[in-house]
Length: 272
Length: 272
Image 1 (cartoon, rainbow over the protein chains, first blue to last red):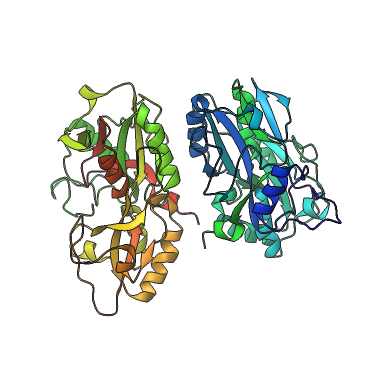
Image 2: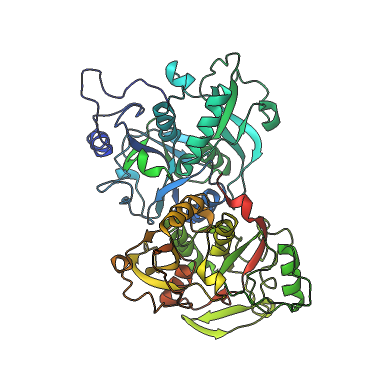
């Protein structure tokens, strides 16, 4: 999710706004990670479900706001989400998608136009990029960004609240921090509930069912130095895992790391 | 909403917990305002809608979190909401209900058992009682509580975000405060987004379409003293007004001031 390899060549200008990233995605120019693009703009996880699954998924998000903070959603069949981007067309504006059938990935298209259906409901869920930007701006160092790897993520023994067919364990991301930085990070991310908010745990990974921090379930391991605590945040992979477990006949997500970039600014998400 | 006349006689012991209030409601012992009962416990607004209206109402709440902060909801047809009360039965546990048909009140029963349907979905929405308790605990005075009247509420020119058939103006409640108290109240209520959060406006009522503070649309007027500003919070009457405007064939709410008292503590709702 946090890979720093840019989607466009180093010689090209980095897109400066969410609208620019979406325009490049729409025209087919962009097919890479969105981390580092349009600094300051909110990026989001995508989930698209047929209407007869969407009501339960919305309840799942409502019941599990820390892993599934809903930034916006569409009317059924409507590819626009004006609250997230004036001209946003969810069928074209993400660099790459994943199409799921019965919980299995069946394709990774660049464009959804040919497979769009009038019963599809789009959900955009907050992403840790937003709070990582706030942490860095507050001089809280982030190990996986320094190492240019993906953040380590773990399945926990913390259950999500079931909603209809959606259920499963909460997935968390981990950042090692000195205790004073952990306290500051708790304060900073408390201000950002729309992008996972405050940590769910720190210090004792076994208590939440994590046996070996060196073996994350997703992403890459990072070293934990002496004097640091592992700090765990609810992670946007949780809803994707719930979709994979629920096995709806049809679903679409973004391809990992290739996020929707919105018109919202990270600063707008902060409570104060 | 904030009437301080207690529901039980002054000679009876005041119920100390949400579970006690619910038990008294269930047994028919309680038929009054719930303000002042079970101090410290979260009270909530109730809305019950048939399933074919509930999905749009949930989207309305999702799109309008300041007036409609959802504390919990039920599975369709299930009168339990375990996240809000271990033994909670929404059909019996509120002192008095209002039944609506096509946007008109058609009854005020004490019990829903005989009219319950297996397609009904219950929504419990945060209430200002919780943040008023936090304000008083922080020595911010509240005029309508001192006067033992209902808080004044006003329809504004701030539109809610439409979701399907639900729409309408935001309703706000008003508390006059000295500027330093207003700033402190903003800080305190920012910590409580589950019960309307920070104010939506202060100081210039005409800007939000309020012509005469002496003539509230709901509740009772309160005097504004020299050196005070009117401070406006999004109000839980907003969803009831949206239901009245949408005119669903069938709906149930609580009777004003006779709220659901939950097992949650007000202190649990604070972000930090």
